[in-house]
Figure 1: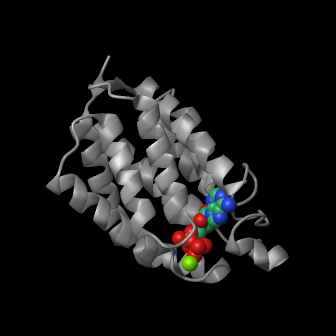
Figure 2: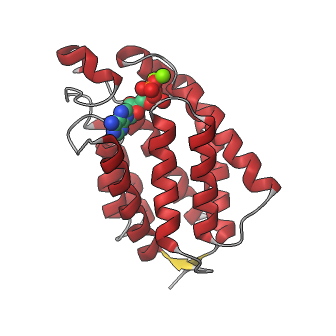
Length: 201
Ligand code: ADP
Ligand code: MG
Ligand code: MG
């Protein structure tokens, strides 16, 4: 079965940076409805820094790519999403250790650990209308395939529309958060779409 090295993970995060850049206005529009209208700008800055760092000093292992990217997000993104996505990638990277190449199932396990770390840090769970509504099902579905993870993340993001936010800025709106798609769940779906695209190349 297929295995993935550092170069694959760097290609994923570089593709993700391009997708975030292209979709930044849409992410910011979603955040202007139930937040402070900065999610697109936050992630654009963070992922641009990630892509730049990975290009300049390519880490040698999949785990190192993820931990480097996570550290970069934490240091460049001021909003809630920086530490949360940073923790996702750092914890996933740590879970991979110093293995040179990993299979999809190892990646799924690592993302599972990353998602748990995000839940611990933010105190949210599925149904709270956060990025976890996309990340939890995506990490789970990644055990099956990249395409399944992409579909699960997209479905999870869409499923945030009728929910009332219980964590983050959107929770300040109470009932008024209902009827809007969560920006972070939407960016999580973008990340898993980029992963599936990279795997399909
Ligand atoms: P900020 O809210 O600080 O401006 P962003 O706009 O970049 O940060 O990110 C907002 C997104 O972060 C939300 O849409 C939500 O998905 C996610 N988020 C916020 N708080 C939490 C939390 N406690 N747990 C998980 N995700 C969260
Ligand atoms: Mg915001
Ligand atoms: Mg903000």
